[in-house]
Length: 300
Image 1 (cartoon, rainbow, N blue to C red):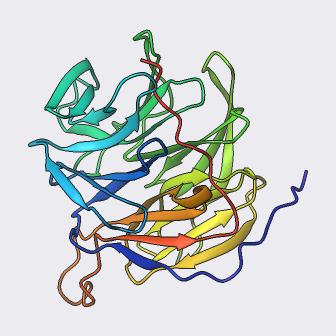
Image 2: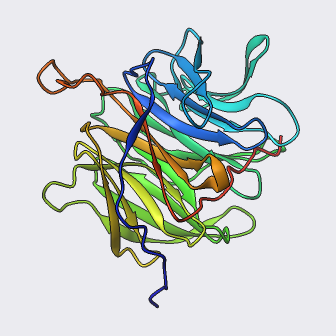
């Protein structure tokens, strides 16, 4: 079935974060309550924040690698993937309180991307830090503390993202160069995995982080291809945002009416020539005529 969707027109990505250049920027998260954008630098173990226009930027060094964050419903701070552990993260004062280990028998793994679904469950993926072995999995943690291993094994998990109606989950197999979609039951169980979109086309790079808008379209960062693409719920390519850097990592909606798409990027692995403009690792923003979905919060 084809879906009727809004065309988003021409795009100009502008620099938002001028002070920081992340080694591996990830997990952009918009907090509607405080009107704040948060994101992490996985390799440097830093949590960044700023306002929608890039003002009031600050950073907190955590002293360990942090793959992702998600907001909490009824408490300040975050639930996060830290090293190989799901943990609560508070900023004032700084505290990292472990909840449960992940992949305890795989010392080369670490947490990567993650998000909450509309029911308040936290989904987090792990990966082989050397990006060589298929040892990563997606995990689901409920507010009551029940942990379930779901999709895998993969070299590098990314995502997930969730459709506005909560019935579909999108997961990324970055090194397999494919985005999958799954039927998501109210219980959190997944079924009917299928290919949503292959990234095997020349010049497409590798699929990385992603998010959904209110029309159910999926926005995916192309690592290595200097772009973010919008796909219809049927997987049709609709729009492309070009970037002045080659390694976009993820994206999320925020700002006024949730119509600003924030895009994190990475500088890791780039030498001076590949990063001639000095912008790799910065955060960019694009104003659109379509809204995103508010970030779901952890029910624990």
